[in-house]
Image 1 (cartoon, rainbow, N blue to C red):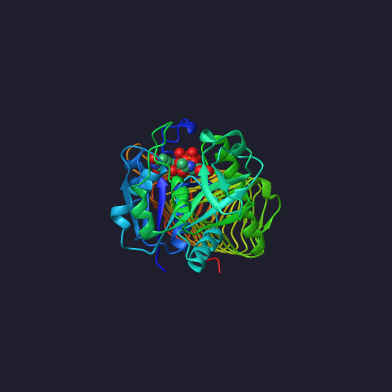
Image 2: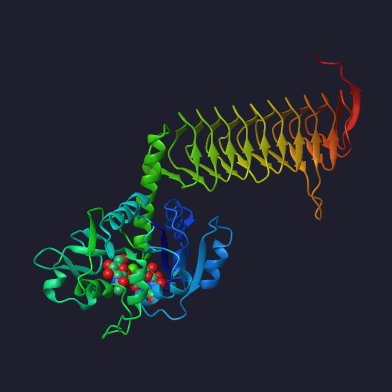
Length: 455
Ligand code: UD1
Ligand code: CA
C-alpha cells in the first residue's frame, strides 16, 4: 500500500506570542517541524505535503536544505480549519497514494513506531479512517471521541462545542489519522463550516464515515507525552524535557555514561562513542561527534565539532573544530571555528585557538591566543603567547614549525614564520621570520645565536 502524508503547519500559533512561525521554534536545538518530517522520512511516506500559511516564506527558507526529495509545500492562504488545510493537498496527492497519513507539525513527540502501528492497523483492517486516540485525565483541550453502545467510534466533538456529558469523556482525539485516499478526497469537499466559528473541521469526517457505515479504527494510547501539542512556551518547555530525556536514555542504552542526565543537554543529531563519560552541565550541539572513552565536562559546550577517542575536555567551549585522539583541553579553553588539533595536543587554561591547525603533541598550556596559525608537532607555546594576527585591516598567518619552543609572553607579529627547533626568549616581540635552530630574543626580536641540534 502506498502511503502519502500531509503535515499541517499553517496555523499562526497565537498563544506562543511570537514573531517566529511557531513550527520553527527550536526543540532541543532543532526547528520543531523537522521532527515530524524526520518521522515521515523514516516511514517512507511519499510524497509528504507540508501545508504552510503563517510565515510561509520563512518556513520554506528554513527547510530549503532539508534532505527530503519527496517533500512538497502547499500554501493555505486563509486558515479556515484543519479540514480546509488538508484539502489544500488534494491537487498534489490525488491518485498518487492509497492512503493519506495526516499529522501536525506542532506535535513533535509522536514516535515513528506509533505511526507505523497506525498504518499497519489501517492496512490490515481496510478501514476508511484509522485514528490515534488517547485516554488521559487532563483533556488538554482536545476533541472528545464519541462511541456508540457497541463501542464503535461515531464522531469527534471539539471541546468548545461539547455538551457537559461529552466533556466528561476521557478518550481524546490525538489529531493523527490515516485515511483511505480516494474516500478522503471525495468527502473533504462535503464538510460544512462549523456553525460557531465557520471553520472546516477535519474531525467531522469521522461522523460522516460513521453515518455511511464505513469502518473506523482507533488505536488507543495512554502516553500523553507522545501526543503533547505545542501551543504555548510552557508546552514547548515540557516537550523539550521529554525529548531530552528520550535522547539521553538512548545515549545511555548505547553505552554512554551520563553522570547527571537532568543537566546534560544532547541534541538529536549528536553521536557519542562507547564508554565516554559526560559530566553535568554539558551541552553537545548540532552535528557534534564524540569518540569512545572520552571524558567531557563538567561545564562544557561543544557545537558542530568532531572529537576523537580518549579525549578529556573540561569546562571549555568548542565550536566547528576537529580534534584527534588523546587530546586534553581545559579547564576554561575556547576552541573556535576552523581549528584542527592533532593527536595528543594539550590546550590548558585560558587558551584560545581560532582557525588554526596544531600538530601532534603540541602544548599550549596557559593564557595564549593562537589565531590563523599553523603549528607543527611537539611545539611548546609558553604562557601568555599571542599571535598578533590582525593589523587593524587584515588577518595574517603565523607558521611555527616542528619542535619550536616559544618563550613565555612572546608576541608573534604576523605574518611570521618560526623555523624548526628555534626558540624565542621570554617577552620577545617577533616581527621577522626566525630561521631554524636559532634563538631570537628582545623587542623587536633579534637572532642572537644558532642552537646546537637537539637530537
Ligand atoms: C485539533 C483537533 C482536535 C484534536 C487536536 C489535537 C480539529 C477540528 N480538532 O484541534 O480534535 O484533539 O487537534 O491536537 O481538527 N492548522 C492549519 N490550518 C488551519 C487550522 C489548523 O494548518 O486552518 C494546523 C495548525 O497549525 C496546527 C494543527 O493544524 O498545527 C491543529 O490545529 P489547531 O487549530 O491547533 O487544532 P486544535 O484546536 O488543536
Ligand atoms: Ca493545537
